[in-house]
Image 1: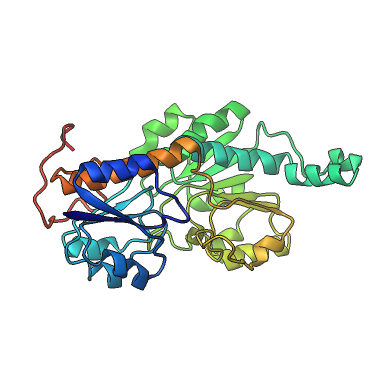
Image 2: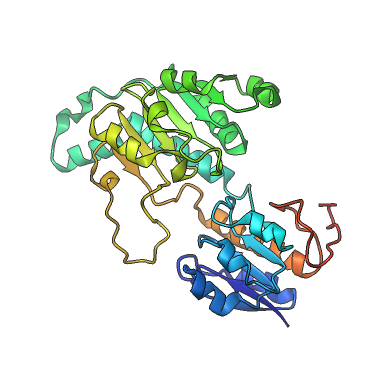
Length: 341
């Protein structure tokens, strides 16, 4: 019998529908948390499919998955999976890249609006009967201010569509602007160099995957280009920003603030009850959320079911819709799916 092992079953409980996808494919379905390599290998060394939400799957694990045909990420980013090692060993890596576009865009705009209107400050002022909070000097009319988007993929474009309704001036930076000129024109977004975006924007929002090229893309030097009144928003990946440098800027009030859903130094995937200590948690010019930008009842179920379906397809010998490593030579031949994917 085939064997499918689902990681992170405590922090991200299994949905009955995803369980059903694998059992219909003839697989025994094993649920574990598995945050450490040895925990994963105890259950998964002989698995045919490995399903992961938030655990790291390094080369030291992948090299021992002797039967594994597919590693299915129940979500979008695959920076915690050693995709290169999986490819070398003929293991297909799949993901669900578009499961939370609406949620992430909504969350980004929520963070922007909450900071622009200083909602945390206003709420605390109400609790202390500080009615003069309405005169906060940091609250300005949003229309006419500039939102800079770092990246112009699907999530950034979803933000741009929504942000235009608030009268924001929109800029974006991409490495290959020619590829996006038409889309940018349709959305009334100006494509600009990164240094210009950082120096002109009132709000800077990050929309990039984490890889070698984007790690600490916002270095201390680049962060220093932000205006003193600027707010940095990150719903992408924490390590795209030099977090130590960002904390220093925030502590010294050299930028107005940050609204962060992802972190380099805070493990928001730790088991419940784990205590985190980090200087960001002590600052009053930040809004922090626990990697919840992509979360909703609908998106959570979608990521699980579609991720499980990707794994089930590979077990049936079908090429899934989204393959992260298309150059892989699978351990077992895959035929095209019903949509020719």
